[in-house]
Length: 349
Ligand SMILES: Nc1ncnc2c1ncn2[C@@H]1O[C@H](COP(=O)(O)OP(=O)(O)O)[C@@H](O)[C@H]1O
Ligand SMILES: [Mg+2]
Image 1 (cartoon, rainbow, N blue to C red):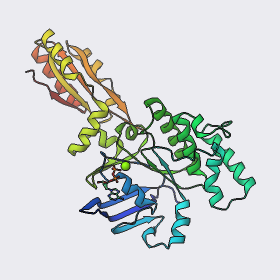
Image 2: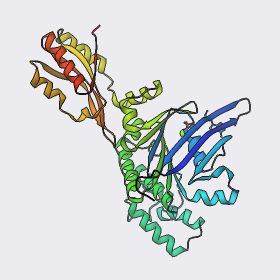
Image 3: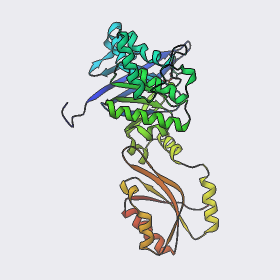
Image 4: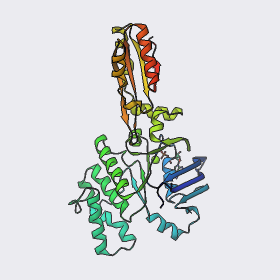
């Protein structure tokens, strides 16, 4: 592949999926266009019922679309025969919220299962499974049963099994939703590591914006079967457009007790100016606050907020109180704006 050439590995055009319930039609996926490039960690986020699982099942042919084209590697998979579809599915790995391991089989046997189905000879299976165990950091656990493992370890087995046939695409359906926050981060680190090491393309669906922020370079937001917003993760976090996206971003970045803290500051400092500084450009890396304090005779207290990072850069909000005379307060605001920081003055009640 030529350097710099963008290669789309998954392409959806005008895809719809309608389920016919007893009494009604469910429009699970509607008019979805989507392009995933090789090497992406592409996140799809949405509330429960938005159509995420249906969409991801369309990508490996577990569901057939009612309408539209699903291309993987330039091949329209909706046109494949049953046999070709079965072979094709082998080249796409998938992991699930509840791991879907066989409880009566050992870790090594679980990992070897897809290899067995693919007809790989026994000795090779064993060797490959050991290799995969090492890749996911479970060397020495091959003889354990799933019930003897923690949630994070179970998902590592799920990942090893999904990678057994060397897929180029890994689909993750709420793969960390059953895990505690720390284990979630460990599994996400592993996915990021595999993405880099193996050049694996990952499509990941979740209802947690934290997952998106942590590892995805691209994100699409789904609502009622449609993709309502999409883009580079950093851009979406910095400038969400749709209401649903704003809600997701806010949940990942906001603190709960904000309003009470603000009120306490207002009571203590009636002359202070409370402003929200919105860092959308690379200004989030600049020490603009300390610069402002040095430039003008003012004090700035941070009330709440913070700068967070995605894999591509930083973004964030800081709510601060600027104390000083009115002229200097205003000069500081002009200074912030000049540094590419968006400024919103919060009026007291
Ligand atoms: N096999 C099915 N038969 C009927 N309705 C379904 C089926 N699968 C999903 N749905 C419906 O499609 C919609 C989207 O579901 P789903 O893709 O599971 O959403 P999500 O994964 O975002 O929670 C829901 O209204 C769900 O009830
Ligand atoms: Mg789902």
